[in-house]
Image (cartoon, rainbow, N blue to C red; front, side, top):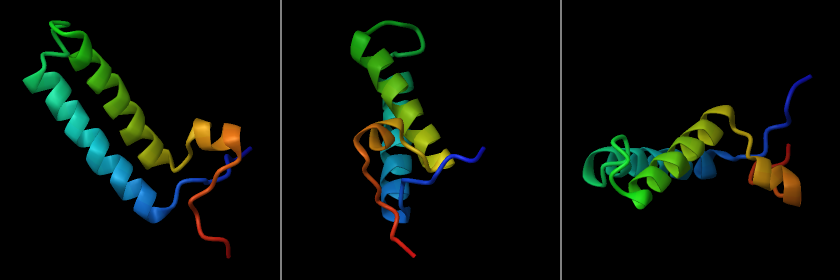
Length: 73
């Protein structure tokens, strides 16, 4: 069973760039890996979720609310 794609190309790139930025900031700048700050850990979690949803091109929140950023064929 395949999951329907609901993340478009522009949305995918925005998620990837924002996610990578949050992972870098969360792990190095805010000390997320060491658990020094709650916002470092939060940035890591959100960043990882954004990168993964960009990679698989499927967002569970979009599916929940019936949203799609993919152009219809």
